[in-house]
Length: 321
Image (cartoon, rainbow, N blue to C red; front, side, top):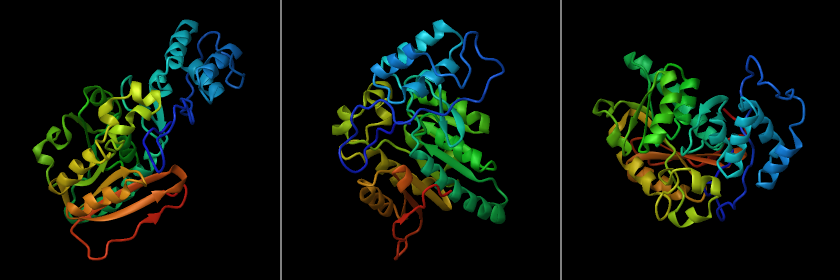
């Protein structure tokens, strides 16, 4: 999946595609006239996609063919893709952590990089769940803040089925889409500005708070690929002057919502990690950084209480769970 958020160096240029989503599970029957799955897609379709700048034109053509009910719908889907809409929004889904996540037009597309955030959150959730069960026999509470499609929360819930899942986003379109992904996992979705969206009863009960808040600096928004700039909500991209404005708000209020021993996990970039880590420490949480070179991913965690010797940043082994 494309990742339009900055890491070290300048923002990415307008390249359409790094890798298409995985194919959907096979259906009972293919639409009439659909070529066999192992057959090459029609040359004219591949050429049209390639001319529009789609790097993986053949893979995308196969996915469009599989999603279309017939030639007329294939034309409509192809028109949307050629016009620059993200492939995941055209198909209505994205492959993420092995799940098929519903993605609607105008909703932030989950990035592959965020799978590392899920892995870190799931590990923290398992540890917190064991402690919570031993101490109080209550269910583990997971909160996905700035949830977008709800992909991160849904993936954590899939990895830790015993979790009680909540998600929130300020964008109504995101909230509507997130319900399709979160409610089947038994979760609840709220709409509003960060913690203001949440029921007061959650305060002090959140064991794992995961946040993929926007972290693109405002001045870099014009340089994002058109797929993101033109088809994803600005609220999911723009993090303010230094990219950390929303993150700081999430982090500053987190201690009021975390349970004793609860953990906050925030996706950030390698370039912005010092600022994210400083905000975590300023909130009275013990900061720790984990990285995944494979996915070019950085996650800063914060745990309740201060430590005189915070753990040093660590690098996760590629593909580590």
